Amino acid sequence: MRYAYWLIAIVIFAASGCEAPPAEPMQLPADFVQLKSPGKGYELRAVSAEGVVIGLRRQDNPKNGTLEFWSKAVQKELATRDGYKLIKSEQVATDAGHAAALMTFEVAKEATQLTYMAAVFIIDDKVLVAEGGGETAAVEAVKDDLRKALLSAH
Image (tube, rainbow, N blue to C red):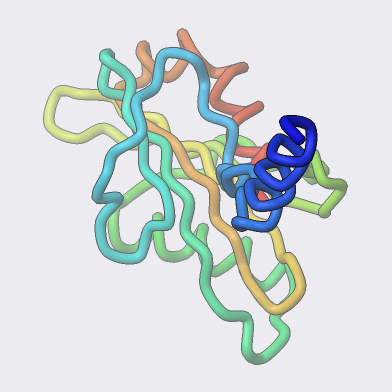
């Protein structure tokens, strides 16, 4: 009889909708803390103690824009709005195998040199921009981890 109770309990537990929690949209570096309120337009934002910020934006691609189109749009937005200069651009693949443009930008704001990295890619009918940046010295210290995080977005 005791076996029947355990069997019923296991069936009820399994049927109760217990599922694994949904996967995070990006694998954050170990020293980053995810913000509870990511801010308008962001699906995820996280920050390191050194002030490096990581974010993920996802938006519709209603006109089926190409990767080249969206990469140029990001470049133009950053150059026009914030004065960032593109210093490196490479064609890469995300961890999931999606073609991506990984771009690195720099700008001097007042007496501070800033570096910004952005990975732009398309999944189905969405454009994803995984981005990270901060003071150049702080970004340089976590550059490899930052790159890995940006390309892990899905």
